[in-house]
Amino acid sequence: MPEYQTVAISLAKNKLKLSAISDLKNHTIVAHQRAKNYYGAEFFDLVTKSGNNYHEYANQLNQVRLLYNDLAEVIVIGNNIFNHFKTRANFDTSAAIEVHKIFGEKRGYNNAFTSEKVRDEFNTCLETLKSNGHYQKLIQQELKSSN
Image 1 (cartoon, rainbow, N blue to C red):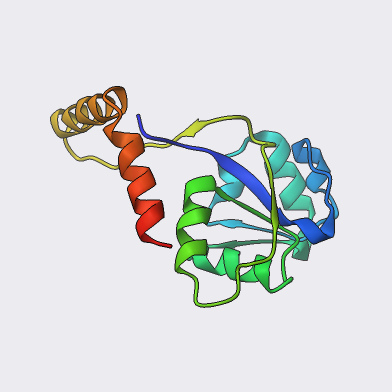
Image 2: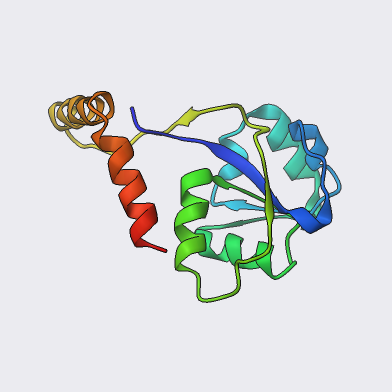
């Protein structure tokens, strides 16, 4: 199964100390669409009670823009997704950031397949790419080409 690492990202200049989900309380948080349903009861309760301090956006470039424009203190996003949008942004992304791994190391996600056979073939091919090192090379190549 493909994986991504969900993280909380803040601007380094704000010196936020985030070591647990509960540390997000009282901060302005922006996340991807339906995020409150993915990261457990503690996250759901915290953001549900935060009122106007929590927003979700389907377009994740908006998260990155809000962070760098000081309109959100924290964004909840996949680490690779953040890097993808940061390198393609048409706005200043030079400010230093802090990556807070408060959601654990890895979280998987499911691809939408209408056929179990196609899904199984996809997963087999992906595992082959990971085991022979091509997966990591592709990621590095993509990051290098976007700079």
